Image (cartoon, rainbow, N blue to C red; front, side, top):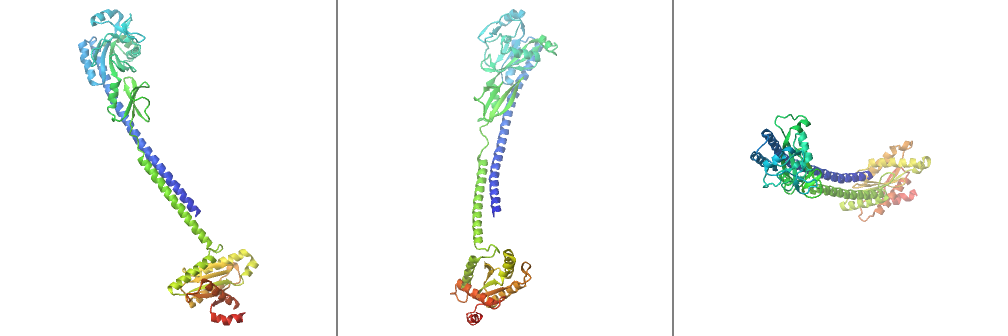
Length: 492
């Protein structure tokens, strides 16, 4: 019973743990699916912004090729190509910055009608440029923002942009600045593409420096680029745009559990962070866990109830069982006799009680010891089990005394059963004994007089059993008041 109980408890624990594990797996699977969906959204939005920016940068490269072929395009010519750049992508402005040596500065100023101006190193205001070897003034600008007051502004004197002008010159590839204040207002990035003298060799860095004649430039306003990216996202999604590790657009602070995707702008990588508020739900995992734990609790209560009932049945069985033979003991025997007599009265039938006492059993205990006597008792119990019906009751009343309750039998059937038991014992050799075991058996019939009590029947069977012993043992006697009045006095 104890093994079954602990096996049940282990099953309860496994059910509870299994439900929790299943809930965790379902939640993690939902979470993984959600994160994958969020990553896909971020990648799709980043690709959209990147492709639009790449289109604009590609057009900027085309403009550089046009300027290289024309060498000195007119304002009208650049305006035509510049407007096409603005239509194709997210550029807010396109400009041309020619390379003006100091010796040619005055002629340039007269031709353009404005002076070259530069930004102070401190970043405060504009002032006329000092004598510098080379200038890169804004000459032509195309924008939808209206007239630009910074025409003639020397980007070569701008400490924020000069390093990227040099890099564009030396590499020959489009180069993007970090976020800077834009001349047309707001914050964004400039992309510079070097323009070389047509037909000049540009294989090495030194050759590219000698061949440089200016730059085409594009302006990306950060809000516009972010709008292109977020247009591909659901409306409730939070998005941020990070440039050089700094937040450029979006809600403050880092988004919890956000997916990120890179956006390549020329030679610079920006990062788009996407956080979809519709995270994985807890309803299904929680339902699985609650259902599993509830099932485990119900199973545990059933196991405890079953174990308690089984324990009570075991205690009751032990209370009514002889510890040596496993037969009914005297208490259970008396209960079974009362029940058998009640059935006989109800059905109007007769039954019999057989009291069996082994002959000369004390000799076995004295000569071979009590362990040998116990083995003999067990063998006798086995013989008796083989001689009774399933409807009969067998009990050990103590020592070497046994009782058999025969239900629904007549005098003759009871006598025949008793004689069969005596014969079986006589022929059996217990525990290597050379001598046979014999028994004296007394029979009492019940059911004929409904007023007879169990105690009376037991007394009558005992009387008949002692009569069998007085008659020489190894015999069977049926209780008969008339016969007993004649025989018992003589036997005494």
